[in-house]
Length: 164
Image (cartoon, rainbow, N blue to C red; front, side, top):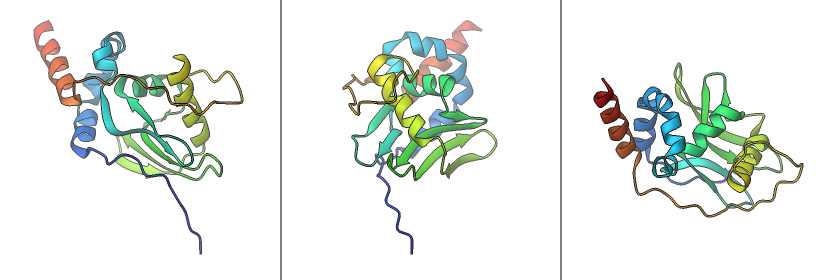
């Protein structure tokens, strides 16, 4: 018998997750605006992040996740990983992703430890580039936006309408 233990992520807000990915093209089109606007960049959605055993949770904002997708293996082909749980010691994991072709799925990813490390480096240094074999496991406190993902979608849709 095989027993597997996984860290438990935050209780997901499935409506917010669905709204985010239903409007993924709109969000991608306005990625630079999100990067440039701290109030948009720091919007959080419950269960976006890394939830490894033995360490504090690494909750990611929309802006941080967009950066990780652009610059690291948080995006693999058409798989956009948004919730990663597992053990950094064994590498065993269960990672949730969204795909424009397959929708919402889970899988074990072979780059689990790299994904955790790139998220930690981004939060600690502002860069996704891993510059050392040792990654201190310290999750800096960051301010969260008072806006929700639905607020962001409304703002982006309004901007789209006004620009046409």
